[in-house]
Image (cartoon, rainbow, N blue to C red; front, side, top):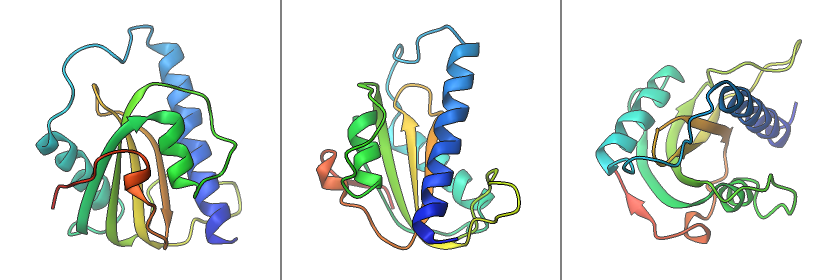
Length: 147
């Protein structure tokens, strides 16, 4: 399985889970205060630890809409889900083994770059990807270095 296919699988799984949990929870995810940078960093470090790298390097984030964040992760692909939901896109460097469901009979290979799309209000991980290419966060918005 190629890295691009693994990334696509991980993203699709993350979005499918998001759709299921949103349907189960009718409360709007766009209410309440936005997460602080410290809260985003904590979520990112937890996800990294769960993916077998408790000490990732150079953690950065940018905030924007879900549809643009998906295009940034997918390197400009024109087919992304529509959505103007506010999200934080977090990019970490390290060596990760993604901790997520994968297609039956296939494994998701380890990667050096993990991306997380977080709901800016709840911190819910809406999508994750794993690969070896760093996306251009600046295409989403102002880049903030968290660590």
